[in-house]
Length: 227
Image (tube, rainbow, N blue to C red; front, side, top):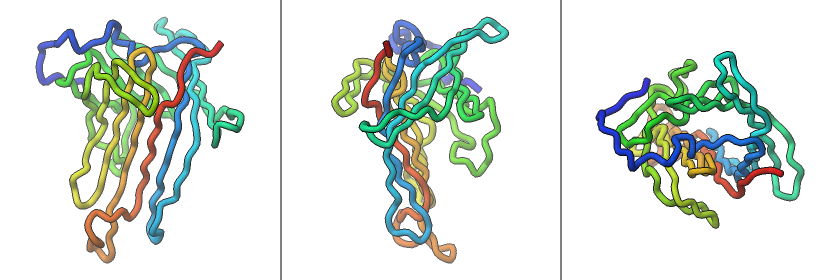
């Protein structure tokens, strides 16, 4: 469900095209450094993992309604010295009022138009989210619209943040999910953090000590058009 808190649109919040934050072109690619921490009961320290992912638009077709559907291939490798290995494909399409991504059997709605801090929407409305899933009963919203942002040595003049969930102050759990997009580039940051704090016999141990959960952060390190 797409909801507006106000019917007034600030035209200054939109880039030249609403699709600028999720551009699609054959050969377009992004390379990400991915870092993951996995906490589990009985282990004092998390298991740390790191790898790289490359998303590249490899083909385009049309659906029954005549809408272009772009296929994105994802490749992974553990280090920059290794060759890429293809792991999956997913599809993306531009609708008049939104972007639709079909990834891992989930139909996601990462962006809707117009871009406004007054807009909230259910990014998971097209599939069932179980009540045990941290994404359950959450709404997306825009923050930092058209703001400049630096990601390590990369500078982006115009970016937008999509807050997916932000339950970070409680004593039971920590939930944080957000993505950041750069105009004419696409996704540049994706953090998904879900921690449950440590309990023994129904009592919390210490204050906000992580008992289990995962943090995964994807940050862009390179992008362009493959020749």
